[in-house]
Image (cartoon, rainbow, N blue to C red; front, side, top):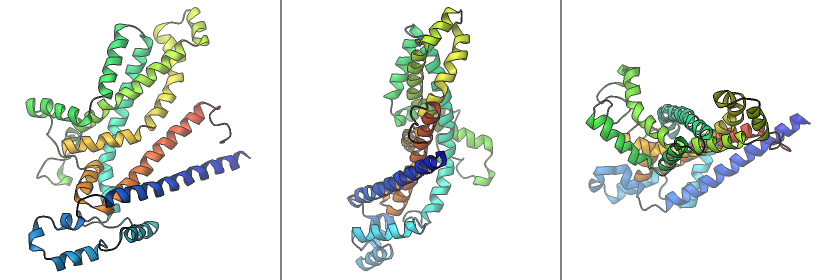
Length: 329
């Protein structure tokens, strides 16, 4: 019976994912179709004045842009079912190849930011919760509220001005030094180029984890069993280690997994500021260039990415609290 419930739970999640992909595909294609950007003009670029109407028509026919929007969507969907995401108009390469290459760079950026923001947010939230009502708590809350309202691109520009332009400690942008082959770039140089974008993204992602951890810890400290432990003489770090950590760690991790969407949104802005060659920068270029296959491919890929993050968070919540998973498995 239990295995049947688990199988049914998995099938429900797969059904939700398929429904989500279909809805996102239709909505994304509709919004892109309403864009005033001409894909043919973006494809031709600076040579637009030297291309005649007949050549423009041939280019549109080659890419299927002369067909109706409905037919274009059906053609794209049929290729998608065969595992073909199409070819990018801007990069002249398969969309799947571009996503794979760019995602590796973005994964390093988002992975570091995700780990650092989680650890730093958990630490700040724990300190604020243990020091509730004190000046330390007020400073941490004010810091988190400020971060929650700080745009990632503004913070990135500020870090560039301080650490790159004024101090010269880190490069202004890019993923590797300009003019150097990727195979000749050392790990140290890659980390130097990665540091400021990762720092920007991790700083703006701290607030949610810190505020949630603080509130959860306050609830734990006000519970009956903690009050009883306090009466027995447990105070400070001992009380936090024995009763606090185990009750706030997993909920904080679950919340952090659910923040994949916000993480990618911040990565788009951070990559633009630092000209970092990741998936976020490719999204902007595809949108500005009217590259429909690439834009749709990235949107679908990130939809799956965010869905998996929410699925992991949902599963962790069910593992933590048996009352939530009642009826699922």
